[in-house]
Amino acid sequence: MYTQLFSPLDAGGIRLKNRITMAPLYLGYAGEGGTVTPLLLEHYRMMAAGGAAMITVENATVDHPAGSGSSRTIRADTDENLDGLKKLARTIREQGALACLQINHAGRFAAADEPLAPSAVDTFGRMPRTMSSREINDARDKFVSAAKRVARAGFDMVELHGGTGYLLAQFASPRTNKREDDYGGSPEKRRRFPLEVFRAVKEAVGSFPVGYRFLADEWLPDGLNLEESSLLALDLSRAGAAYLSVMGGTHESFTLPETAKKSKQPGYMSDLAGEIRYQVDVPVITAGRISHGHVAEEILGSGQADLIGLARVLWADPEWPRKVWEGREDGIILCDPACDDVCLQLVMQGRPAFCPRWSPDKTRRLKDLFE
Image 1 (cartoon, rainbow, N blue to C red):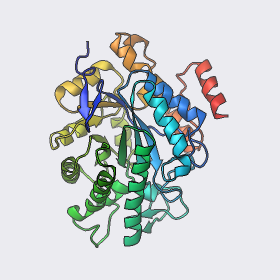
Image 2 (cartoon, helix red, strand yellow; image 1 turned 90 degrees about the vertical axis):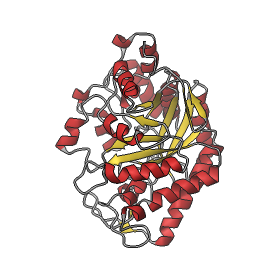
Image 3 (tube, helix red, strand yellow; image 1 turned 60 degrees about the vertical axis):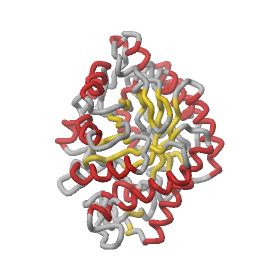
């Protein structure tokens, strides 16, 4: 029925069996200190078993604690967590999906005592410290080390997190980068750090595919917009990105009334993806409340994206791909926007997220794994 959604596609030299991917979604399932737990493994086993082509694991820090968004952020900065990462990659691949791990430095949004950032710009009442040249080089090197670790762990791809207003995006944004050295000032200089990181990672991992979570628009008056971000997208495409996973918004714009209203619309970020896809020669992923097969098919058919990213949609019902393929869409358990974002509220309280749409048995089983 949905011929494009279930057609294969090559990205970074690897064939995806269909156009459905899991977009990264932080749920607080890692252990304190970022360890891989039984709950995390079971979660990603379920995500991979439903028929999606690729599962992108939520952001793993390249620098703990300076770059970690929380105490339960997965760690990719140390070999002490390598065995856990190997189990995670194996768990996903055993279910027939490609395994991708997103790596990140949270920058000014880190939970560290003294967050680092391109510039000292207030962040919800906290003031990060401006990074020195040495710290910029160090952060780049830590992305490289983490990416090499991802490859050693047996994942099929690595994704650099340049979205949500985290460190790579902070350098690109005129709102958060007020530097006047080689890493700030003009749009070209603001693009320098994310491009250096990407190129250094690509050189270090060779043929191992490197994707990029791409912030197209901060949805803030003085923030990064499509006019500037399109140039970064073109640079990343030319540098060999396996794909660009396009998104809009940051932690500072997600709660704005206009953004909240926009985010309730089906495929609300697909227009951004379409603008970026027009500029580049690599596959583009779009996400954002794509709850039904016909919406996904229309996005692909319109040329706005090459791949569909499902986050909470897949979390609410991991069987979504199989049910759509088999014509059982009436049986899909849909994410309910009327639940007042219970999952997000739990995460913000430092607790693992559970979906109110799940059956009592499933909730109980996963809570037992957490305990």
